[in-house]
Every structure is written in C-alpha cells, then in structure tokens.
Length: 160
Image 1 (cartoon, rainbow, N blue to C red):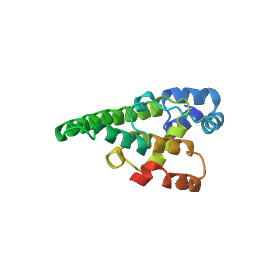
Image 2 (image 1 turned 90 degrees about the vertical axis):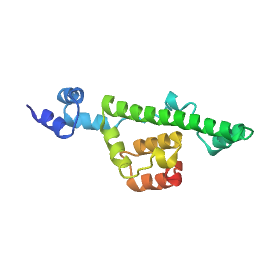
Image 3 (image 1 turned 30 degrees about the horizontal axis):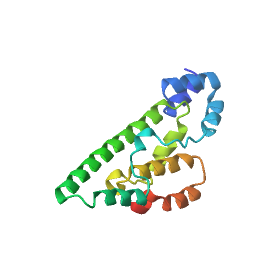
Image 4 (image 1 turned 30 degrees about the vertical axis):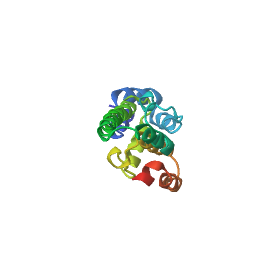
C-alpha cells in the first residue's frame, strides 16, 4: 500500500476515488476537488413544489371554496406529496455524496449541514431546504463569515 492509498483511506474516499488518487496523486486530486464547478440545476422532483410564499397563497386560494372535508383531504394529499418530495431530495443528496468524482465538496456540505440544521419537519418547504443545501454546497470552501450571513437571510433558516 503506497502513500496515496493510505491518504485515500484516511480521507474516507471510495475505491473509485482511491483509484483516481493513485492515478493523479493526492495533491492533484485535492486541487481538483477544490475546483469543482457549482451545479445550480433544480432537480425535477421539485417541479411541483411551491417555491415562494406567493405559490402558497395561490394554493390556499384554490382551496378556499372547498368544504371543510375537501380541505382536509386536499391538505392530506399535499402533505403526502411533499413527504415524497422530501424523501426524493434525501435520495438525491445521498446519490451525490456517493457518486461524485471529487466528493470533498459534498463532505463539506454535510459537515456544514450538521452545523446549520433546518429540517422538513420544521420548515415544511422542500424548495427552501434545497436552496439551503445549495447555499452550503456553494460556500463549502469559502469564507465562513460570508456563509453565516447568507444562511441567516435564507428562507429555510428564517422559517426554522
């Protein structure tokens, strides 16, 4: 076992990444890890989720003429759908953590998420949680003070 293999094990990289470290060397692999482009693409599973307070008002307006029983049924359906979306988001993030070529950004995102922890149970808006996750990812290697200021203005933390 050479020095690169030992480093890959200590840093918690997968066999795939360990092979890349073997090929590139640890210094080049880490340099590449810090140069990851930020992907701002919104996943398809968030297409039907409300994104703004105006979206929530529109949803309420649609339901205002329903009977109380119909409103309860509509609310149950919304909760069911948003719960499924929340589960899809968790799956999406786990997939990113496991399959990125340079996973250091995702590891930093997890570490920061453990520090700033809004949850679906508190926030109840999947899109805002996605934005929060993206904010952590975007600032994963940046200035912590700037990240903290951005987090304090985010919808997820304001709602939390």
